Image 1 (cartoon, rainbow, N blue to C red):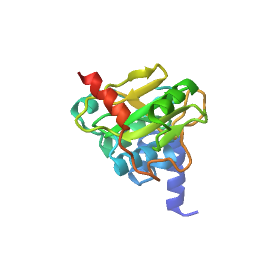
Image 2 (image 1 turned 90 degrees about the vertical axis):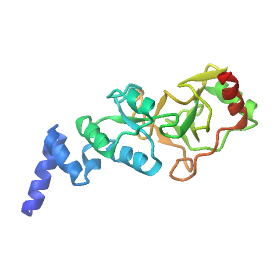
Image 3 (image 1 turned 180 degrees about the vertical axis):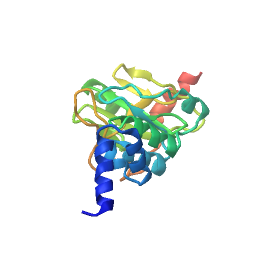
Image 4 (image 1 turned 90 degrees about the horizontal axis):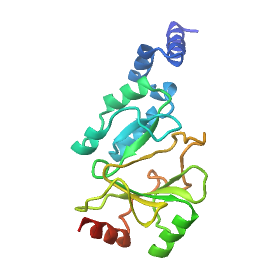
Length: 213
């Protein structure tokens, strides 16, 4: 085994044992995926889609850092910030901030009744990037944030289990871990890597506009 290989394997072993400096070195060498669960995914979401990504405490819906300034200033975390966070919390999952900062709006469906209300109101289920964790009637639908309409973190005009989520809110992203131990994942052929974000359905826009008045 070469000296380089010896050095690398020693560095990786130290990183996996929790050595912050070793993790930092591996990340600087482009090896973030070897020392964190979701760090590489976080960077890809941020760089490819311009999403504001924040580390998530595994198995919870809580974040590892305060994120209000990003929401309020419409400023996305930098690559260096993301690398530092996932170096510090290598087991972290991730959330994406919604609203203008990420140009994202999400419909959060929690249960069959909520799904049925959405289908009845819209005449069908919207075709949009969809994340879930293996539960048929619990999923997130992703859309572009509506232009010149103020949205809320959570707005539930149609059903308590059907949340319209925008500015000031966030949702957990795949492949982060849910409290059940399952990983969030994108529905087959319904990831943002495979399809573009659609506009928010007109019926929902009408509700958002009424809520502004």
